[in-house]
Amino acid sequence: MNDKQTERQGWLARLEQRLFEASIPQVLQGIRNEASVDFRELVRDLNAPMAPAFEREVSRTLNRGAERDLIPAVTLMPVMMERFGLDREDFSANDAGLFAELETVCNHCPVVGRCWKAMRAGDTRETCRGFCPNAQAFEGKSLEAAG
Image (cartoon, one colour):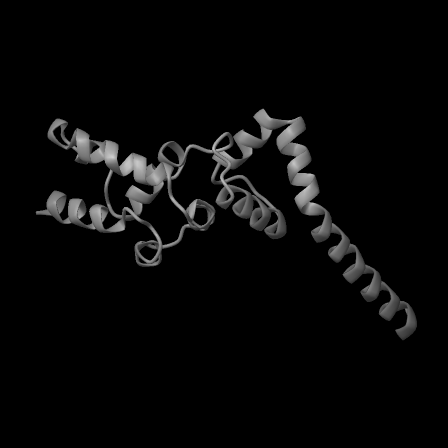
């Protein structure tokens, strides 16, 4: 293969990638509208493989308020709690009010897309502390459970 053919293939590959990335928002909205059940399942499966550009667009969509696609307290909060060494059983009947409050905060999280990506990526407790509005409460409960 000569240099001109190699250069042309490189250019075509870059164009193909740009066209793909430019179409992702429309593709995502089409999937949400036409195959909403499948899309919800995809978003709720934190281990589902996704192209990075598609994952970024899903994250943006969640940040814009995609309540019909994801209930953060159901999908994300249990995984976030694991990052802090907690699970549901660490909250006694006396903590029912606290747990409900944490769920409410989670369901109204302003960075749900970031959290979703972090949970998918397996980000650490230290990283999650930087953005999770429940991090301080989880830290306190984690210390209480350990002590």
